[in-house]
Amino acid sequence: MLQRTLRLYKNAYQGLSPSVWLLAGVMLINRCGTMVLPFLTLYLTQHLHYSVQDAGIVMAVYGMGAFVGTFLGGRLTDRFGFYYVQLLSLLFSGAFLLFLQFVTGFYALCGSVFVFTLLGDAFRPANQAAIAYYSEPETRTRAFSLNRLAINLGWAVGGGLGGWLAGVNYSLLFWADGLTCLAAGLVLWLFLPTPERSVISEQRIETNQPNSSTGVPSPYRDTLFLAFVLCSALYLTVFMQLFSIVPLFFKEVLLMPEGTIGLLMALNGLLIVMVEMALVYRLEQQHRSKVGLIGIGVVLTAVSYVTLTLTDWPVLPKAGIALAFILFVTVSEMLAIPFIQSFTVDRSSPATRGQYLALYAMGGALAQTAAPAFGSQMVAHFGFSVHWLVAAGLSLVSAGGFWWLNRQLTTKTI
Image 1 (tube, rainbow, N blue to C red):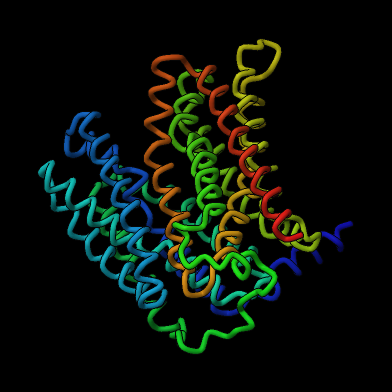
Image 2 (image 1 turned 90 degrees about the horizontal axis):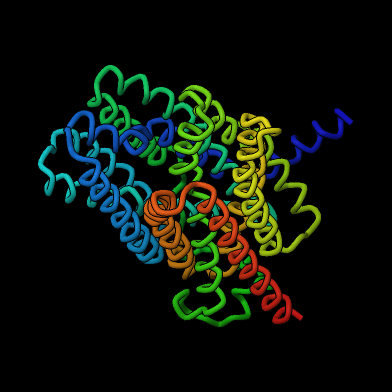
């Protein structure tokens, strides 16, 4: 049993190209310094003494910048290639972070935050296009999972170190975040080979994948993919309650201290680091439908939020309910997000890959903006229990959409 498990993990990490590992390393360096975003609201309210409403406006501007940045990043990736978009995004956003700490006026801050996120989020579709380029079809989902592993490790390091630095001086967050962006750009420039766009191998185009049969030149004309993005955005809006409303619920309803809440959130990242690569490898060996797996993951998201309604039952320990929620939502994330990314790549062609990835990322940016607003309004007007049931219902709607898409794609394949 032990040998079989060790062999599974060994096989899960084999077959990935050195460039994929390098891209994961760049992401790890970048995310280890991601400290401004988790503490931006506290910085605005505690350090600059803005009201909660003004801080909310700045965070909304942050989401708008992410939306526009991913759109432009996809366009620029298809026009100039992922290498230069990644490099310039890291360098310019790093330099802008160092400048942002000196901006204190409200309108100047809104404009600066918009420009910063526009520059920084152009990195997303370019980075995902790079992963797709340097991976083979049979290793692509695992390549995305490795990148997510680096993101989760980086978030764990950056979040912990950022809390300590914020306690010393908020300016240190900007220096650490900006310098790690610049360091990641330097590593990319020195070690990642520059691809030749004119020599994209035909072997990288899977003739049996949907993009070879649709004949659609743009994701904005691909009706099935537009439906896929809509279902994904709905799922992500519900999933991202994990980072906004769930900690508040743990604090106010379950009466958990901040340290315990932090440990539960860290457990989410730790489980992803320990399990996701092996799980994705095992599922890929079974040749399961990617959209079908996504649907299962979304259903588990609904189950996870339903568990939070069980806190009214006095016989159930509240800590156990919180732990069950983290386990369910983490498994759902591991089933859904890597396969959403790899399906997006499979649906595209090399010439339109940046636009497809950008459209998916734009849906994610909208979800990131809508999630806290939706959650806070629901809780304020109807309470936590109703909010969790509505979130579960929206998850089932999203899962139903993925089920329908899977039927459509299966019918077209046959």
